[in-house]
Length: 118
Image (cartoon, rainbow, N blue to C red):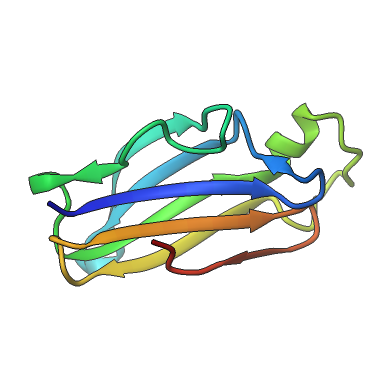
């Protein structure tokens, strides 16, 4: 059974990004989006389970939006009024709904990276 998961690591503080807000969207034809989930990451910087699994995970395009600047401000990090990294939208595709797609994010107030994890 396929599933979609995520994990965020705060590389500025060397810890999971507990409490970061994340939104999962399905990208529809014509540029429309459908919000599927909105959540706060748990103490381990994870969604607390799969974002989607089984029949809910369908072939297509998706977007995860990570609310980075609000997370760092809540931690007391001094950011400029217009932060360098505010939200991180990650667009990705699901080709095989029977597979596990893990989308991790490594983030600081000044940079981020991602990859397809396992």
